[in-house]
Image (cartoon, rainbow over all chains, first blue to last red; front, side, top):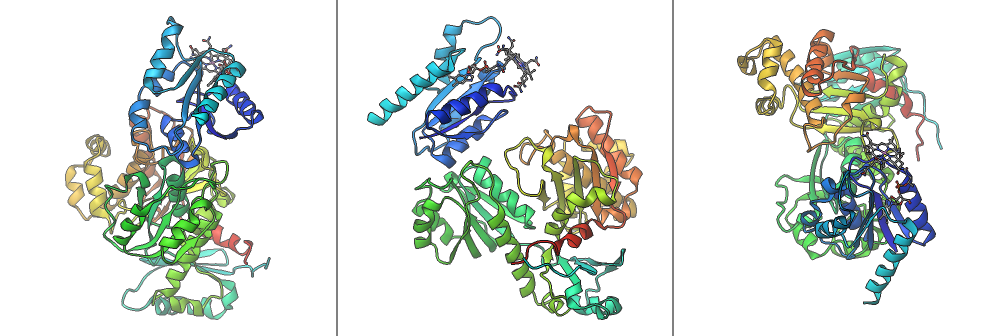
Length: 137
Length: 403
Ligand code: B12
């Protein structure tokens, strides 16, 4: 199964990105890693070019909201053949905020699964589970 | 691999003049338009030509005005971007693009296209194209058509498009650029086009070697520039000509996923020349938000746009430098964005190197850096006074594999 991953916006935190690539490969995914500093359009373009079933975006520096707010509008311009699952994780909030409010907020932006400061492996187990269910459906 | 003869004489045959390199010396000649290029060359350089074998003579040329392409791709960030980049680096000047998802609303180009390039998808991706592509292509007039996309669409496309040439996918299986096959195809096509031009054909009487596109040669020259000119990486080369302005830049200057083989890329501004496309240069300048400040800064008035004085030509060249920097800066989203803040040198070549003084060039670059980037340090300006940059690449050509 193909997955596109990377760090969104002007975000240079690379450590998680490397770990995610390694974990995904170990789990048997075919990984297209766009690396740090990736714009949302580039992620969606990569889905078109690869027909990946999963998009896994990281954001660590607190700018996720600004970069992902327009995901829905952007998605509507694309015609994805693979019906990809949209996932985001990392540090999704900044300063004083209600972490519980982040999940519905990012879901409203157009993500299917949202992980704010969650354990990577547990989260990826869940992602795989959801992908499996989708295939069965 | 066959090692070619060391080149002894180099010619660059342009549309307005030609240059000759021999024993470390470069001479320039304005073209005599009343006679064919070959005759002109023989009249002016008969001694040089007669005293060398065709194996020792190497020629590059831009006299055919370049080829035109229409590129159809499935995304801006990958297939289209990589293909446009490869086409520019292969010496193509005129590039039209169409994002495949826009096919229902896109207008086919009116002019005849030399080569249509279709691309999209990594290998393994199917069903990118459908019958709308064939309907669209019926409305395009073209000479050649190639496919450089996912292997899994080859059969479908070949069954529906006559004379489709199949090349390696421009996207490799990691979504990185794989430009070799397309680059080779386009440079060969350029050569064939040059060979077919009535005025160029006879040049093969004086050379036994392939005639290369000049922009391709300039691109090859860039890694060797610092051996001869005082240039520090990262740098850009601005080649301001009569019809177009080219910019060649170190790929260190882009935040990007493209890493081609040379480390240098080329971009063409087809409407920013100072002679043939003077009108469009002025048109672009007049619409630029900084133009009045710029006029003021240079101490000239708007009347200069209508003047034909020497002063005006100099001004147009400064304007071209400014607009090129503007178009690759963060102020302009349409083109590639270069990290101008880390730029060390700006090399100026082309007709400009004969007209503009160091001072004229520094002034305009300073204005740009101060006004638009709020920077007090500007990159060094290096003017290719001898107009010799093209020779660096030519001298290395013979080392390339010849198969
Ligand atoms: C190292 C570091 C840097 C280095 C980065 C070097 C590099 N190239 O990687 C430097 C110094 C450059 C840096 C810069 C900045 N940083 Co910093 N940085 C850190 C630091 C100390 C460690 C990050 C790290 O590598 N962690 C190790 C990795 C493995 O963990 P991780 O990144 O958290 O990722 C894990 C999970 O988040 C998760 N995960 C990540 N992505 C995803 C995606 C999915 C789908 C899932 C399920 C899980 C998941 O899995 C990973 C593995 O467990 C953190 C603080 C911290 N202790 O976390 C701050 C931190 C990330 N930085 C922060 C900030 C604010 C900045 C700056 C803006 C500072 C500034 N004002 O200049 C800049 C931003 C620059 C930019 N443009 O991006 C903040 C972010 C605050 C926020 N989001 O609310 C943090 C949290 C520090 C803080 N507490 O304030 N930083």
